Each structure stands twice: as structure tokens, then as C-alpha cells.
Amino acid sequence: MYHIVYGTKNHNGTLDLERHDELCRYTAGVLQNKNCFIYKIGGYTDHLHILTELHPTIALAGLVKDVKLAQSKWIKTKKIFPMFEGWQDGYGAFTCSWKDKGRIVNYIANQFEHHRRETFREEYIEMLQHAGIEFDKKYLA
Image 1 (cartoon, one colour):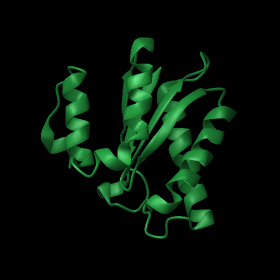
Image 2: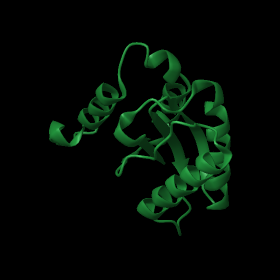
Image 3: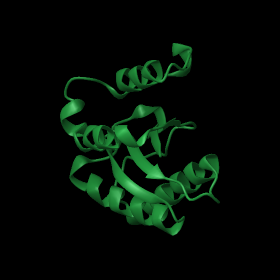
């Protein structure tokens, strides 16, 4: 299982919460077409979380690239988020154990509440630290 996280370009809050579920449903369809099993998709105005199991024939980097491209095209075609400028260049992907699945599903489900207290940047740094990944804050603009 992978917990995939990525933000909007420049971390602008362009994903209107009232239509966020539409983006999640569309994303689920893209992942299903790639033979991935979806546990949860959610996020906030400036980022998205995906908890998924990849099909053995799918490479993570290619999947994320394809999902982000499909989302961008869909958003621009449907004009669902008029201020959306695109996704950030990178992404985070954290492997997860089965015992953590329920906790992560709940975490993603509660993003609206979570981000009343913490920014995406703070959340992402916490995720990196929890995973034991060294990083330079200058790359987390």
C-alpha cells in the first residue's frame, strides 16, 4: 500500500472544498483504470492524499505522473476549479503496513478538520519525519 501525497502548484488553495469530492471520484476512476485498489482519496484546498494498492505491473512514478496529468486535463476541461494552475512537480509516497490502513484511512477522511490546525507544509514535514526521511526545508517551498 502507498500513501501518496502531492500539492497544487505553489501550494495555492485552488481546490474548492465544495467540489473536492468530484475530484476524488474522478481520481478513483483513473486509478481503477490502472488496476489499482483504492482505500481512500481526500485532501484539502492545496493538496491531495491517496491510499492505494498498486497493481504489480504498475510503476509508482508512472502512476503518479499519469494520475496528475489526467486530473489536470479533467480540471481544465470541466473548469471545475477555475483558479487551478496545476500540480507541484514532485510528490511524496510512503509505504504503509496493513495494520496502519485504518488509521491512514481515517486520517485522510478527516483532512478538513485536520487543516484547521495545521498547514499542508507542516503536515508534510511531519510525514517525512515520521518516515525517517531526511530533507532540506528549502525544497519544501
